Length: 183
Image 1 (spheres, rainbow, N blue to C red):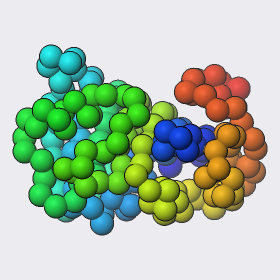
Image 2: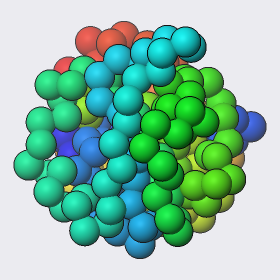
Image 3: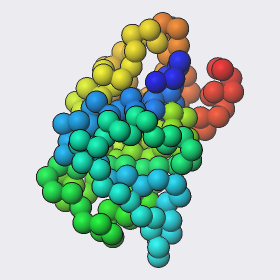
């Protein structure tokens, strides 16, 4: 995790937007899934979606060593049960779409995430709030500050956490505007 956290929640879209959370921070929360599907780099096009790779749970810790920041953008979704078939068009479409989508029922997963420059921008869709609360509880360092999870769950406000202090912040997808003021 970076030395700060910017986060807000859109309950209607079942979406968290954050800056400061890197993929390696999320791996412990993903270890109870059977694995993830991961797309690195560009999203492709509607006619030719970008390829994805399937990683079993046992392979996830190795991603800590990978430089996902160098990929620019990446997307992932967790799955339970059998992994999707290589080249599954529905999964490729899901990982190439940036709007609100429910994770594919065939994946039986909890999360669908789109990230740009690992740690810089994260848009995380979820099925159940309790999964997000558990993920954040295991991710946010107490040194950053104590986030009011009930307030975050209600949505409406953004939060900036740094050096033990929690401040209200605007809700925006324009992460650069927030970070340029704060860092």
